[in-house]
Image (cartoon, rainbow, N blue to C red; front, side):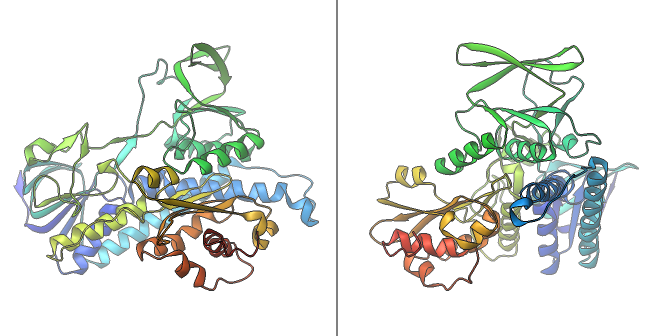
Length: 463
């Protein structure tokens, strides 16, 4: 086993957090290597965010076509070509992977394809296809990511039981799909496949879908999904998946009642598991809990020269959170102290309708002891939203006395795009007056954010 030249920074994992950390460190003059066992871009680029949103684009277009008659456009028949969509998705992914590789090369980051594990707090053992080597680094950033979790359900390894990765490469659209898990991933894929024409049922163990967003957003989305023909079975625990007459039988219980449903394909989307088992964290002295790595606000682990970012933390599992965590980690390595602020990390849910949230929910704000004021502006009072055929709302949670904006929650068309403005407002600690004073172009859905701020102060115009 040879010892390579030492590096200033070694990054484990080439996903959104990892490659951004490597680029930023290299741009700052550090000697950097990045170790990735599979493809650059990680889960997000290869089998997560980008592929899912490519499918979402197709689903959104199909929904637009279905509603085009009201605009005087008659489409007699649509032919959905699943293999063509998968091919297009693969092309988008390939271009972005090539782009990441180009940026790393341009910035002189050494990329090593292999599996890394700790030998000690400054040394990594890397197994490649050809050999094994050792890397010494002053600082190490863990960006190992996560994988689809697999619950202990009888029959989960059977034929036609797939995860989200496999769902994004299906060559044939199933007639009926049961989605186990109504979180962000499960809800997004349920809406997508429903738009494609599959009959979809969602089984969720919790009382509501998309856990973690404001309760009014949850309720609105659930009502909309049911209206679209998706069956939502909450408070339902899956007991077993069986084969029967060439189909899948899913046994579940809801309270004391046991029942079953049938489908062609079962999609398991119950969450993520950390990719930390092979890292040898104990040899590096890195503390973790159930595989999730513990860090402070500077992204430091229990070992000062070892940092961790992204899904490996098990907290804000969004690519955009990983981007920012990467920046924070690198700045601290460079001697520029800073802290990660999670209060302005957006939640972007690409369902039909979309959900975009930043900051505290109404319940979270009350639990923290704020004197909470809530204003909800309905999108049927917004011209652009009506033109687009969408409904929904913008909900602002604020502090009653000083008008500090604590959270903004949006359901409807372009909700995910509006999180940029909302994040800026909360990052900048704006008050309702500040948001209301900003002139928004007309007609845009963004006007609804201003209207919600006005409503919160009792100065509403369009409602």
